[in-house]
Image 1 (spheres, rainbow, N blue to C red):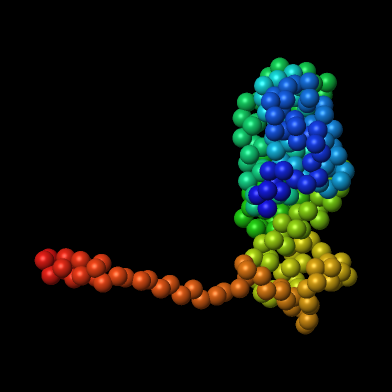
Image 2 (cartoon, rainbow, N blue to C red):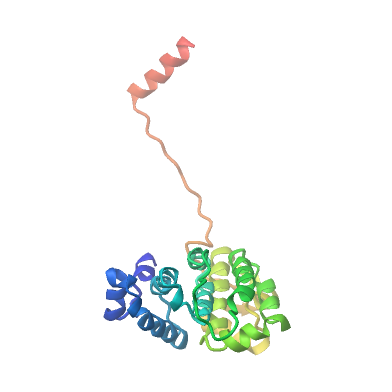
Length: 238
């Protein structure tokens, strides 16, 4: 997983050269990286290091700052939870660009607290609360202007929930799973079937995996005679 995070298999040779070499600090390449970000949005691919390179270029060159690009980077990072991608991106936004030439008001300051809250909910596995807030009227602008353009965003969030479920449960009620995935009825049944899970009597069975299986661990220590005599001698002298 670490290897695919550092160098995703979908990353092109051109992007690899930009991300891994000194050219990542060349402001003339920012448009290439921005185009790559929008490719990720359309294709459901993800490359955190390439997106971080954009944010670093914005730090060094405030006049390049594009708030829509930043928001899209944060939206993609949301779906990487529980990895720290979102916080890595946030760490590069501490210094707000003061020299950016924007034709319209910057939407990021008003959306950033909301995006942080959504990330916090995902990180704490509060999936029903995430969906409630995400589907609320207050976030209609976020959905209509941003996440609607991010192909597969909601399914990617569901995969975040699935990773938590697989690591925690061997059996879970269908109602509880539905609240985690924001799915119900035939949509939930189709999702469970696609995962290859079994649902009977409103209970979904999670196949065994290394995370949801409790196995006793036997710890055996080998103490040599010379070590034992030292312990006995120390005990006798106290």
